[in-house]
Image (cartoon, rainbow, N blue to C red; front, side, top):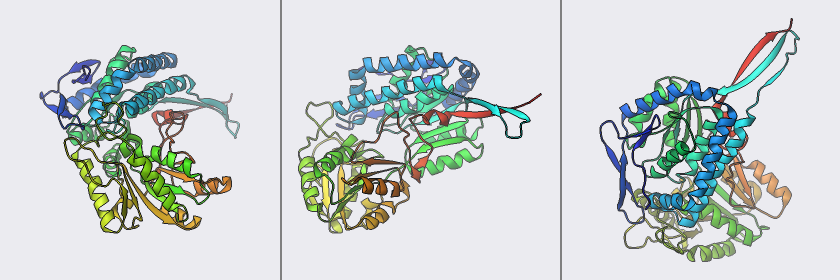
Length: 479
């Protein structure tokens, strides 16, 4: 593994935790410790907050073009360091190197996208309807932000939040997941090299999230929270934000339906299923969770999907030819095992996989289950693993009702060759995003987010920067 940064990044300096604490970073492919990083506590959080608050006024006054150029340079540096960053990501998170390289490109694109949006922050002016006042509208940064990122896309989730904050003129504290802090710390080094002023970005790695984040959210100086993670944690953070009315955007859990109609092109549907299910070993909020397949094509779809899933090579992500790396930790694998066992006990048929291999690492084989009982636990739980659970349906109204019967609404996938049906079902799904005859919806140029208990607000696209900006209206009398 390449040399890594392991300290906190506060006020432009690399520092140890105030109490000297560290936390281990494990290799999920072996269970061995890669390194130790600083484990921040409340005192470190206060220092990071002070650095962000002190830097806010000057950063907000920085010319949009200057902010844009910093992001553009950071985009170029990330691409120059693709192989190094991919290997770092694979070491701490487990995904195969080919996927990690893809994430590096995806992550870099957020910086390029928001470098272009930084110079397009608009306002407006006009005469109010009563003719007595002119209206001047301006956009201004919301202020210091707390950004909390998950472990499954450690580089891209960082750039997706940092990019618009920088473009808008906000300072920030980033708290990455304790399982994958190294990619975020690498980002700090990249942005410093790109010319980001001290104090604009501060990174606190910690195993003590509650002790670090709650005082920040309740203290009154953090004005924006952007969180990606579970719905359960999101609810807790929303309660903590209520005291000081912190502005929030949240990308929470998912329970994505993958609907295959009788007229679907099965080659297209199976190809898309491999992407929607197996990207990141299934450890994605956008992962297809519930496969609803029309009864007339269910056997054929299941056979083809099982054949493709069974051909995937499982192993350490750093090994050539590997398609599926380990799950993030032993708890994640145990959860997948329990969900599969429950489905089998309720009558599901294992078409492929279904049993973890012997040996070290948190590996679980690609698994396809057919004839899944709707009451199985994996129907209302994010699987977060390489398991495709197939159920059958008979008509459009039925499958829409079942697909929407969930508190989550992040993404759905629809496969049909009928344009009218495709649009009708897409519009009927209670989700924030739909993949129509495609298994990949994520793109920096598109607004990412969900409805119901899958979150608030959007990241990416033209609206992504709006989450970090406020409007100010000035009334000017007409003389």
